[in-house]
Amino acid sequence: MWRAVIGFVVGALVWMPAFFVLAGLGNFIWSEYATHAQAWFDENVFTFPPPMAAYNAVCWAAAEVLAGWAAAAVGRRREAAWVLAAVIGLYMCSMHLYWYWPRFPWWYNLAVAVPAAPAVLLGGWLAAPFVRSGVPAPAH
Image (cartoon, rainbow, N blue to C red):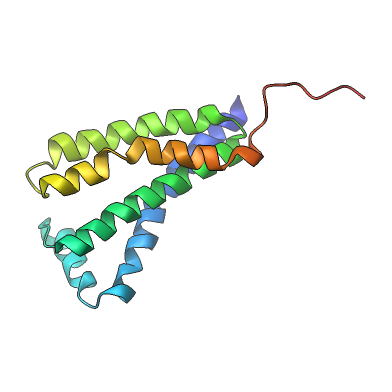
């Protein structure tokens, strides 16, 4: 049980920094990406053109897959990823479908919120080799 809790915490701690590392790679893809990112951090103004905004949505999904993988791999239980999926899904949906809805384009809000929980679950599924099966090990 404690290992699953630690897995959840590790997955949660991996999630946001993973997004920022992946999004930071956008600086190498587009020279003006950093300008739009800085506008968001400084003034909370979303100025990303659609291709950059789509890239951000992909970065969110990739970070969620990584977080789900970390939760399940460290926790060695699928349930760690399930709980993380619920928490991240609820957080992203509340932020993008309610609080930030007027700040972002409607399609961006949906692209970030809707796949959040499924992406975490996908990461948990990809960690299957590290997850304990429900069958107890035979005694030797």
